[in-house]
Amino acid sequence: MLHPDVTLLAHNYVRPEVQAAADFVGDSLELARIARDRVETPYLVVAGVDFMAETAALLNPDKTVIHPEPFSRCAMALRLTPGDVLAARAAYPDAAVVAYVNTSAAVKAVSDVCCTSANAVEIVNALEEKTVIFVPDRNLALHVAARTEKEVVPVPAIGCCPVHHALTAGEVRAARALHPGAEVMVHPETSPEVQAEADYIGSTSGMLRRATQTRAETVIVGTEIGLIPRLEQAAPGRRFIPASPHLVCADMKMITLELIEQAIARHGPVVKVPEPVASRARHALERMLALSRP
Ligand code: SF4
Image (cartoon, rainbow, N blue to C red):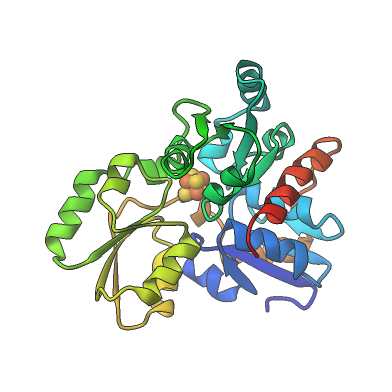
């Protein structure tokens, strides 16, 4: 605990020392649930990118939510505007809009429901609509499309996480060749070609579970390298090797312990989402939490 009035939430991709100082560490779905249900202090500091702090502020409006570095912004979320979503709605008037949590509050506000990489298939399958506009990650949209009967329309056509999308199938094959017998785990934000090379595809929380279940002594990890220390803690004795040294999200790494301490000392920068965006975006998030397994 850094301060008795503060709960620190940290995403699996932030620096190891920040994760070590946090009260809770998890993926986007876990952090959203914790932000809503388990924070008893007046201040909530979010060590992650901008949309994670916004999500915490939306789900727990009674707390003061602090984002230590407002310039820590998800490059994928930045690419999509509410206007893009409204244009897609006009093109597919009978479709539901499913927004990956990696979006701004303004985009969530014009969406029907949110999802994370941990529950995307579950959320899409739970909807009544036969067509789903899925924003903004094309790779996750295609991953979902392969696991549902519904028509899934990725918007924008080229939306992606620049970190995960940069991983190539060739890099995965090269890592396998270097480590014969290793298992390959990748995140669904990676390209379909990379996912086709994998033994396991899942969110970071899914990978943590898988790490304790696999019989492989060595695991090649196709997600942001911040997860590696958590995997090592979850499954001591196994080797976890990044599929590429370039799997680093610079925005996640912007959040340092020093910035967190400064933010706690000055009680800011505070994240607030104005109305009516907040109510609409909160509805999309709450609907996701209601539709996904606890
Ligand atoms: S890893 Fe990708 S999706 Fe996650 S915050 Fe960084 S840019 Fe956004």
